Length: 620
Image (cartoon, rainbow, N blue to C red; front, side, top):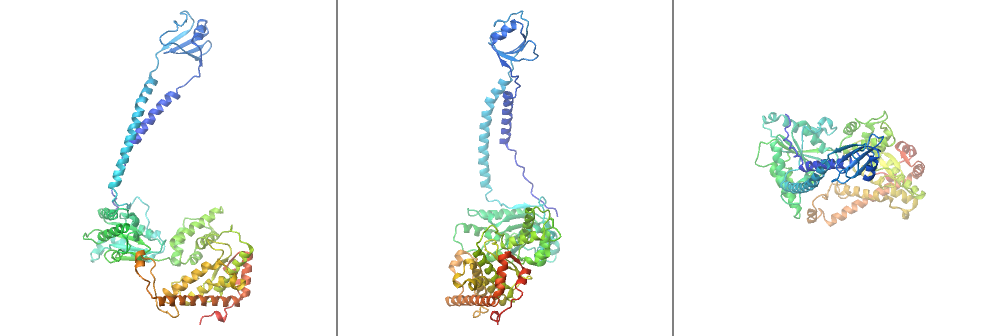
């Protein structure tokens, strides 16, 4: 089915530009007349001297044009002198002898320059005035058109004139593509479904974390279906004036129906689709009217139009229930973060057009990038190319890939930051504390890298990477994560004393508290509050949060705080038991960090080969 696009309106030729063009032409002619007329560089002489020399036979030719004279002296082929005379008298009246041996040539004066000058005096002011008034009229007309088109939709129409994206161009997201392929097939072969009584879905909601490829999948649907594709952002509906958004919704659906079958794609629909009834008036009323119009257009009285609405959001929890019910958004397609196999396919797509050498290991990078979105992987590929270009290489190496991955994951190295020896030593013991606790505890992820070079906003980094993708985390794994997070603070305390701990563990303590609180409130993993969840919705409307109390009592809040404190204290006790039992390994690792600054996984295993798990750090 060929895509039918509405005819493109030709822009009218600008009369102002035409007037200005001819003004420039006239000015150019005048300038050429005034400045480009060939000048011989003639010498000015007095008329009496010319007459005297002509009577004496020293002048060969005199050219007379009006009141100007050009004098050619004896022995010359061209005029070298010029003079002027009274226009009312002749040379003979000025004293030239009639029998003088001189050639006298008289020509009529040219009036071209005077005519052009007179025309310029008349035309140029007229042209300027006309151009000014036409400019003012066009400005007024533009304001009028803008006012008349205020309620028109700003959706962009993508058709055959745009570069298409197909499902084959998108790696991963196989389940999401399968759901959307059915929509494409319905648009291509509607009779196959209608013969069985199936109805085309009114809307498909794409839900996923930022960077997972929601917009790209929508473009692929348009490319595969080969139908008109109207794309607009949710924020483009909302204006300061009430009613404009609803008008734009009506105009958008009207255009789509005229080009049926068609697809409407609303990106970031949560900008207008938030839950109604929690606003304070003003601009929010405009959003509610816009949402009401979308609801009516998607499930109104008019039937039989083949228009599908695709919408994308990463905040489906704040959308209005009326928008999500069957009949409006019949399908909800969850676009998850890519798994290892998908990440490898995505990386291969991004490195397809990039020159790489034989050392590049895409599979190894895919294994290390658990939790990364498609946008993160694209960023890593781009950063690798930048790193290779910075060192003037023609190909991307695995070292470039590793540096790019670490830059995106934990921030760039700040080698210019200078630390004194004492701070450097404390940082080494702090990072060694994280590493040794994480290395020894049995359910912790293995150490990937330890460095005391500042990266991002940290003074050093101990990096743990899971050996494989995980969908779930159990209580024991959470407790090992808490213990290794507190390993840095515990190492500082054991080496320097309890009163010499630093602010370097601030982010570790904050992260550990967040994990412990999530275990108790969201996951039901508390000791005394086991299997009880106290969900706090912090993503709702401001007024809604103000109007509702938290979903538990003050006594329960005290129990939650006590549970969090128990988890943190237990983690600190286990970390201290590990470090005390392996103090020699801590000192060796810190010394190696002071000498080498960055230690990779193999080197960490070598240094900590003799360490052991003490009985006090085990969980029973």
